[in-house]
Length: 386
Image (cartoon, rainbow, N blue to C red; front, side):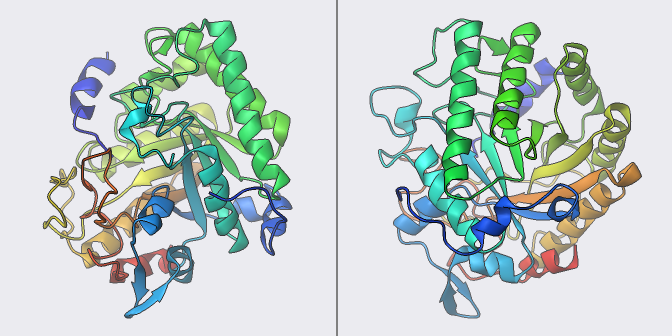
């Protein structure tokens, strides 16, 4: 993920498969209830780049034997998969859609393929709507090209229709996500400039439209609002106060926590505890990671080059210690409000033609749970202990 402009922004913000019959286990996922399966602590991974990696030749190994990446993850205790959705990636006629390959990875159809695979293994699904044709994060929230220039009423209608269409597509396949994010790392708002952080009334309308669209498909799906400020309580309070004061409703709070950018583990603990208590909501860390090496697997500079105040070694053993520590923080949230942890892109090994944009390389290969050649690292075993 391209996060190089994150710190500067935070400083200012603080003031391809078609329809088919469903196979095996996904029907089980459609029957889950919030009082059953959803009560378990989610041990998750965001593997949104997996299809693109596989299409470009990436392979994954367990003790030297090739296996499906999802099966390897499940075998080590991962039970939940997060998948991002981009509206029209790869469209060569529009920026920033043209920053992705024309194959359109992370569009709704690719999400459908990956969600079916995960559900077939009995894994829980988190769908992450970026509402963009490319990366949406603290430094950029480009609207989909088809929505650009629309007013707030039109944009709410488009957001609602798109959200329900994607979820109904999954529903027809027998796949029911357990959680859905309305926006990705939206501390600064989304669909800029219309829903930027200085346009909170508009942002609230967009969030309400997304919430209602999700619930119109299935009331049981839990709606998550996701900000990046895992260790920043002042920013987090400002954001959720602004939302709740405008009547925005949601089921869970999602946080990103990377020690290079979001403070110490103690900062995460203080913030998560306060948010759960202040708003009476469950909390999940839906993005986290830690380096297994200080080396770089390709020519693209690594995005995470330090670990802040966190002192676990940058080794597989250090990754395991870090994951256990983050999980302990989340599990200690008062009144059982801590509901899970997701590792971001553990499978993004260095692979030709699979960079964060066309012509770029892999910024994340030192934070994976596989080595540069796709061999499962010992750190994967940490999920079994969560």
